[in-house]
Image: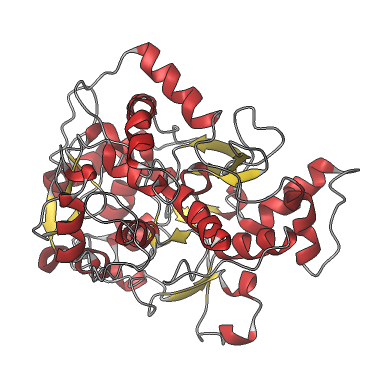
Length: 449
């Protein structure tokens, strides 16, 4: 029983603040923003998942020599971060990377920055999706280093670095509660079957009216994100935390994307803006001081991207969610339409693209015939792996799908295969009719957002 509860705590924290929406005013007050920053970056909200020593002992699971965590803590942290796709914390964090922190009762746990804390060009950002994360390897290694069995999962957690199945985690946790929030010994058969996804950027939230990739949850909902800590919390405890989550939301609404760090050809960008206004603004909005975002949900038959996420959110899950405390104020929409066209602020930093991270570059988004189907992800988010021309990540395209069953798991998860469930790279062919010159101009404009 204790092992089961521990696994729930580990799963629960993954998306504790997965998409905290705006509520009430568009510009939250500065005091709320500061309280939210502290709550998000300096406080743990769940009990420990592992003893603190597990961090130091994890290297013993790698099968290779590694820096000693006692005599070379900096070298060990670099190796630790490389192994699991984590990044240095841009805030005080007791020597731990983003995504790890002290538990409420000591030890360590993961927090929302494990998915929503990324880096690019050697700089870490709160709210940038973590495109290198290997959560499966992390769970396995750290649990074994702590003398625990590797945690089991009743669904696919991740098959490739940078994606995670946050939606199915939430569905699983909700299935263990009745509508009155009493606990169940056996999960409800809610019928949800959600795939792994790319982690979206938090700085987009301020523009949206609805949230999540399918846009079926009102942006005004705070409680929807609190479902991810119910593996440990009672209903009364969740109610006590609601004001804290409101403050966290205020902080997230204050986040802004990093600026493109390389030179931009202003003449090309000006031409590209015209291409954008003629082809993209109806879904993705306009930018600048008078910019407007339409919060448009595009039908599956129109967008054509992998449908597994949109179709996997079952009627049973939506109905159960709406019957609980989570759906009291802001109910999820029972009708499935498709996917929300995302805002494009800071798009240069958010590769890979599409809701499942299946396309490495903006060029591939705009020219579907150039999208690789099987490729090896880069080893880091350093600029040596960044493509300034096509904007996104340089990848090693594989002409033959490797037999990952013969590879160690942490190596196999560098391989992206678009034939896997939910990871298709089809659809969004709206750029196929552009000329190559128009695409390059459009990409140059997108660098300015």
